[in-house]
Structure formats: C-alpha cells, structure tokens
Amino acid sequence: MALAADNLDESPKNSNVSGLPTIAAIATPVGRGGVGVIRLSGARAYDIACQLTSKSTFTPRMASFCRFYQADGTTIDEGLVLYFKGPHSFTGEDVIELQGHGGMILQNQLLARVFELGAKQAGAGEFSYRAFDNDKLDLVQAEAIADAIDATSAAAASSAIRSLSGEFSQKINQLLEQLIHLRLHVEAAIDFPDEEDVDFLSDGVIQDKLEQTQSKIQQVLATAKQGQLLRDGIHVVLAGRPNAGKSSLLNRLAGQERAIVTDVAGTTRDTLQETVVLNGLTLHLTDTAGLRETEDTVERIGIERARTAITQADMLLMVYDVTRDLASDRTPLQLAEQLFGELPEAKRLLIIANKSDLLNDNSSEERIATSQAEIKNHGYEQVNVSCETGAGIDDLVETLCAKVGFHPPENSLIARTRHIDALRRTADSLVEAHEQLTVFKAGELVAESLRQAQQSLGEITGEFSADDLLGKIFGSFCIGK
Image 1 (tube, helix red, strand yellow):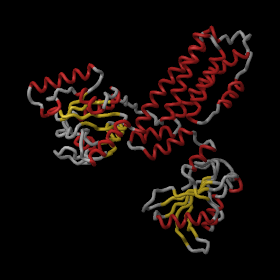
Image 2: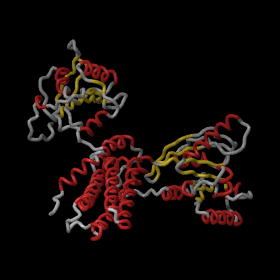
Image 3: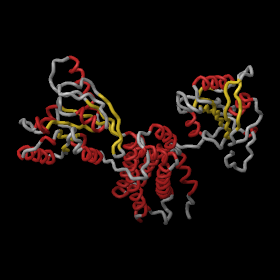
Image 4: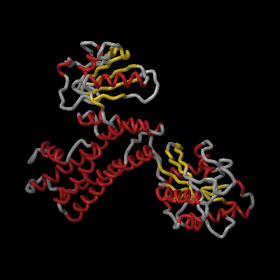
C-alpha cells in the first residue's frame, strides 16, 4: 500500500545531485531473521535499484515486489523495494530500502552486488550524519537515535524517542530565541546609544528578561540531569571486608545468583559486573574482592582491582556485617576510613548494615541505633538490610535513587554529558552577564557574556553558529522604531 504522497514532482530526473558517493549497508542485526534490510542513500541509489531488479521505475513511498539479480541474470533473492525520493527521506537524499530474507549469506551476496553497481560501504553513523548535514535532524535528534537503540530501560527508551521527535531541541531553541532577543536590545543600545527607547541599563526590562532566562536554563538543566541518569545510569561498587555480604547483595539486587556465595573468606577473587534497572534507574553494579591484608597472590590481584573500581565508582556501597563489626571497637565510619584509606565524600558513600535480621537482643539494637545516629551526624546515611530475607532492599534502592537525585518526571528527555556541560557553561555566562549588568553597568561586557551563552547553548543542537545568530539579530530588528 502506498503511503500518503505530497503533491510534488518526484520523477527520477529530479533526484538530488551530490558530490558524495552513494552509500549502502545492512540495516538489520547480524543473525537469522525473517527479513533483512539493506539501505542505500545517495544520488545513484535509484539507478542501482533499477539495475539490480531490471525494473525501469519505482513509485515513491510504495512497496514493489522484485527479484534481485546478479550480473549474469541469476537470482540472488526476492523481496520488496521501497523508494524515498529526496529530500523527503531520512537522509534528505534519494533512499532505497531492499527488504529480502534475513539470512546473512543472502544479505551479504545482495550487498556485494550493490557494491558492484557503484555503491560504497557506509561508515558508522553515516546515514544519520547525512540526515544532520541535510537539516533533517539536529545533533540532539541524531544522538537520540543511538540512545533509543542502546536504551536499557523502558523509561530511557521513551525519553530517547521524545528527544528524537524534537522535544529537547525545541526547549533549547526556545532558550536560544530568548538569548537572541536579549542580545538584540543590548547590541542595539551599544550601537545606538542616542535612541530614547533602548535604555536597557536603567529601565529594568533586560534585567527581568535575563533573570527569566536564567530560571529557564536551570529548569532545563535539572531535566537534562535526569535524562543523563536515565541514559547512562550510575556505576555502583560494592565494597567491604570479606564475608560482609557483598556478593549476596549483588545477587539480591540482580534477582538471580550471579556471584558465588560461601562462608569461606576470600571467595570473590575478581570484580564481577551486572547491570540491573531498579525503580527506573540503571545500576551498573560491580562486586569486588573483600578488602584485607593477604599473602595470597591471586586474592591480592583481586583486591588491587577492587581498589581501582572503588576510585572509579559514582556511588560506593560499603557493606558491613552488623553481627561481627558492631562488636568491634570500630564504628562504621572508622571501618570505612580503614578500608578505603580515607573517608569517602558523603555524596558518594552509602553504608549498608547487612544481617540486621540476626540482631534480636536489645543491646544489639541499641548499638546499631547509636551507630546510625553517629553516621547521620557526620552527614552520611546507613540502610539496614538482610540479604538473606530481602528486608530493607526496597529502602536501599529508594535511598540510592534519592542520593543521586533520580526522580525523573514522566516527560523526561534523554540527555548526554556534553548537553549538561553546555547548559552549565550557558548558565555561568548568564551569571556573568547579570553581574556586568547590575553591578558594573558594562554594556559591552553584558553583550560578550550573552554571546558566550548563546554559543554554548547552540553547541547542543549544532543548528546555529554565533555568526548565524548575530546576523539574525540585526536582520530581524528594526532600529529606530
């Protein structure tokens, strides 16, 4: 069935002409499947499809059943051909999709024939790059394609699709428009100081607009931080003394027996990674060897790897055995300092009191309550759990999410580290602009800070350069009005 067509002349002679080669690649995963798709993009895609199938014409956006032929006329495969006439395609160029059977032998034979007819192997991400280069996508949307494919949770996938549809880009472009408007008045006031209606240094209008923009930037930054957590998750390392229950905790969080658990100290000799999604947050968990002095060569190597993992962790869970460690003279914070060489920052350390179900006498309960109070007084947090029964695990997950600030709204948008960095630099530049405006009354410096803010923000979508926006400012402003 044909898709809805535009009222455009879409005959092959109107295909885009480009100096770039026509590219081709298998678009479906490696392995067996019912259908395998090969995608072509470029000025020669249509001609290649015609030669491959011995057909003379294809109707845009309509599936055509064809046989795919070798040069000697033998049949490689049969399937569907879909033709998307540029610029009304994903890449903005002429695009052909060949849908054949999913076996790798057939797909590779078909791809080899496409190469014989003049196509070149597409590089990684080249289809998306051409879409960006032809203004079909901005950088945020292009990145969202990869994020949607790599999503590790339903929430991350949903957020990536919203970014792909342009929601995040729209927020950024709205902020850019606000910055354009601010620069418009500031630049005008500098270049035309005699204009009576552009006295931005004293009328308070620019200050109000600047503060509104600052507030909006902070809102978008907060949303982006949630999106980054959705996309990347956090790296959590379980550390502590041998037999504290680290591997049992990993198994409990993973919901399966991933780590070997025995009563023998030093069972875990190496790091063990597992990725789980809990309460919507992706946790990249690393179980480590118990930290202690040992003469065992293999165990020492495992402990060295554990310490390396500890330094790289976003969040560190120090697991200790309340039945053993509370009876010692060391408090949990002193134990943490001994194990790690120094006390980690409170924002990246969560103390886990394991085997709390075994505390069944008043003196033990008093000791753990006293221990918790001391931990809290120093700005740290402790969660009491039982890896044996599962008690306290839900509290642990909720505390972990709260500690990293994970509470994404339903309409959250996927974001990357570079987006966060660009938004922070934009916010810093706006703080400088506000100071120059309100304290020093320095119009030229206000303008420069706004230019830097605009440049940083424009990096996110890649849609505008500073010169492009400066031209837009003066092209849209009627001076002297």
